[in-house]
Length: 258
Ligand code: KIV
Image 1 (cartoon, rainbow, N blue to C red):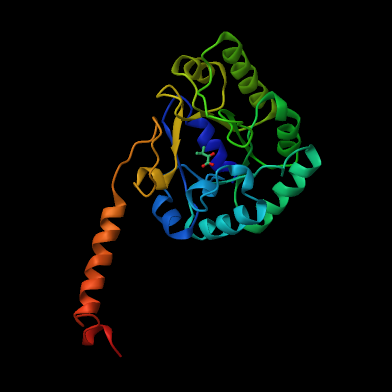
Image 2 (cartoon, protein in one colour):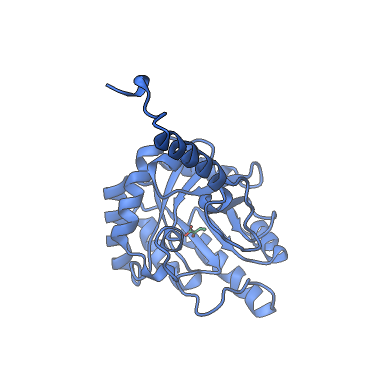
């Protein structure tokens, strides 16, 4: 695991880092090896459970999904999102990270926040728990509408302080969510660990998106989401073929019968 993280850090400024989410084994198997990092994100709250906020996701749900994903991952680095209210202080964060790593055999945790969580990150790293940071829009703490970050000087300076705090605390990388391009560039150039952008421009060391979004499984209408295929069409076509064959008794033929 240490080696996998080292390789990811070494990619900085050399080769772009590919990160995608997975919530179950079958998708994970397809991503494995193509994605440097597979993230079991708490976005599963909205994508799978229709929650209006990731705050409703709990550790038990994260662990069950990550156990499933683990079965499909051999090569990629597997990261679990620590959900809301599971890392409010150092001891809570360590206790829950240990449970997550032990039960799921994942490689690292992701937590939201910058300077505010620097002591927690430091404590986890000191206790051999690799941490991926997450700043910019941090959905667990957002109140009201999501608003991209880094337009004003105050926001720019805060983002820089947050990124530096995470690097100093030992995080191996930082997700930048909905951060203006110029400040993404500045942060990426300032720190020695990789930045992984989501709506944070091409200036980051890597990119992450929600797999269900790129497959066209969700109806996400977010500026940064690019739909690479329309898997719903493929599924619908298979379902309709099955339906037709069942109705006309064409399925199952002898070949599919005992
Ligand atoms: O929850 C999630 O899936 C995430 C990524 C989209 C960065 O945090």
